[in-house]
Length: 168
Image 1 (tube, one colour):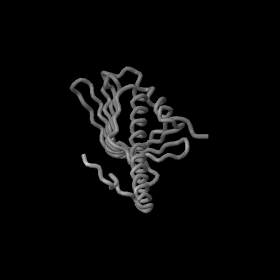
Image 2 (tube, rainbow, N blue to C red):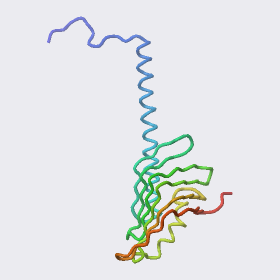
Image 3 (cartoon, helix red, strand yellow):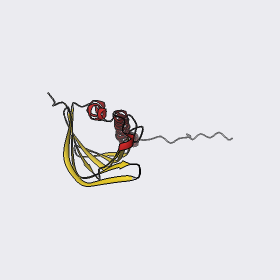
Image 4 (tube, rainbow, N blue to C red):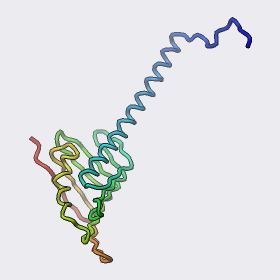
């Protein structure tokens, strides 16, 4: 090559350096927020799987104000005795209590696969999620009881589950 007296890279003015720094900082902040949501989604997915002793999945997590929205939630016990799916869970944290409002909630209880361990889910769910109390309000839920080829479908179930202790 031929050597020239020109610089390989042009000099940047202090204004351009500052602009590049601000842009880089903005990219880092966006990446950190996205990583935080992904880490929280994975953590909640792991806690749900641990409480059910089986598989759990959460398609996505995002926030709307102070409400954490979980989309495409599915949990299942190892033997398939109990599976629960929800289109969306809207979760609001209030200190040591979580208020959860699912939509599109469906549960299937496969009666001939029940082991007796399923009762521990109610006991373990709040501690696995790191809260003292979990309040789940549901409306229009569907529950299916299955045994072999027989199925009993119960639609439009409304209610509230309160799991754990009252926060101090």
